[in-house]
Image (cartoon, rainbow, N blue to C red):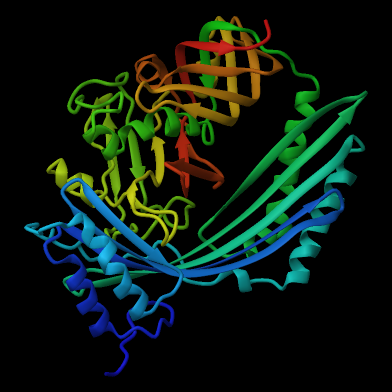
Length: 472
């Protein structure tokens, strides 16, 4: 039988034979698919004047999934062959049992293309990438004599996927990704501080390697590091907090976004479970998850089940109106999939995940939000954080923040953490700026051991009664 190509890369699989194997695997199931992947990744890290690591990784494989009710069986292998797929059939049929399932209709089709299928790994030779990192290091050190260490990382990946369903339908997607990160340490009279800036998206390396891009990145990392040399200990207590636009949306992502994923709500373990149609946030608060923004880090033309990505409204004017759904949880909750079924790789089963999650802007002047604070802080940069999905409680550390007293932004502060819970914080939003911005493209989201790229965003916000952990 002649081979028929149905993936963006050569697999040597025969389409008709593979379809027969998949039909046998999923007979009596409610859902399932064969997910094929080839991924190439290059990461070069330059630290303290020398190459610290240089890695190139090429992987490929398949994942075969069968779904029956709430049960899922999953088998995967790095060998894409009819024999390996056939051997996986016995494993996935464990979820099906005696059968009796009704196969769910396949995803809708789409012709949208949100990013190029160009391979960014080929945009520059290895020597050219090393030269770029050397230039970054030299520029940082020449910019300020207090620079004692500069770390820069350039990364690119090219993921090709194909999803085949039991009805024979196939969909494929080719996903580029690039990123440039810069971290700078400065020393002044024995005090050392760090500044970090990074970003990228689903496009080529050429733009990131242009001096017009990387010099402002280095300048910003240096600005943050130098700023923190004068930082004073953060205050502690319950106070008003203004958040800057863009990357501070990571707090929204963690404290609220995860709680709006379908699986947590179907199981009743989210703080937002059972609240559909009810007010969960202050008037004016509208939160979306949008995987359709061209070239963004969190965007996907189709999700990892083949469903086209979408612009989904989760909270509208303070009212909960939607959850993010994969196919299984959508079927069990009797709603439509939203294009949020994502997986880290072929070795992982999909689950509901965020794409680009952000809050729409309001009509307030951002400076007025700070001016409205009698005693509090203004936070514009965040580092690590933790959240408990069931309660929505979060703890986030600030990397750039300022003391605010009587409406005046004062000295930078160090050691500030924001403590609260997402559900309460949403209702304590008192002001929404007119400066909504997305982050620079540096988000990674972890859930149940799986990591996927995401985007975040928000306007400037004024939130009342947040607990600030600090030194005083």
